[in-house]
Length: 244
Image (cartoon, rainbow, N blue to C red):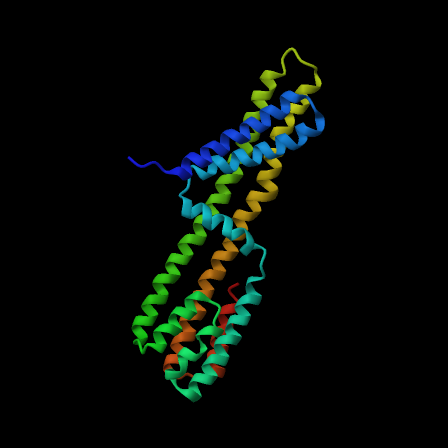
């Protein structure tokens, strides 16, 4: 029977985090304890969360970190502008020239639609493909939000757990060890509320953007295939920007 190496890897990461937190506490060095507790809680949290989700879900969650700091509306505005320019050109040159504009397209969903247009695919087929791809993209992005919301709860639990372990180890030692032990609970709360919770909620913005991006791609392709006025098409697409 094959085993999931990813699960074992994340399990090891969880144990490593616990070891860092406890090891730092036992040294009694204040500076190292601060860093060790912080890193330990963070690493152990990622390890535990990683065992709860599939490798693809974790990959999507990490990829979402860069997306949540991007200006989603600005990117979609550029996309609308690009589609409008292509629509203007193809209305003059005909759909047969669609292949010439594939290299200018950045959005993967719209590019797939353009490739089908270049091959002469029917409008219904292109629409179906984009809708299926859109549903899959939305599903992936929503899973990223679940990962970070789960991480927020685990971080708090991990911080408290380390504090309880360290508290038991502090008996018979210098009283300042009790204070050091509380650092883990504090760091767990900070990591949860300052990092993971905001990431979880910001992913919702990414999901809305992904849905809107798919709608823009679908309407853009339909407008191009139907020979719709580029000006009218642009107005329709700009209405969707209000959803972001």
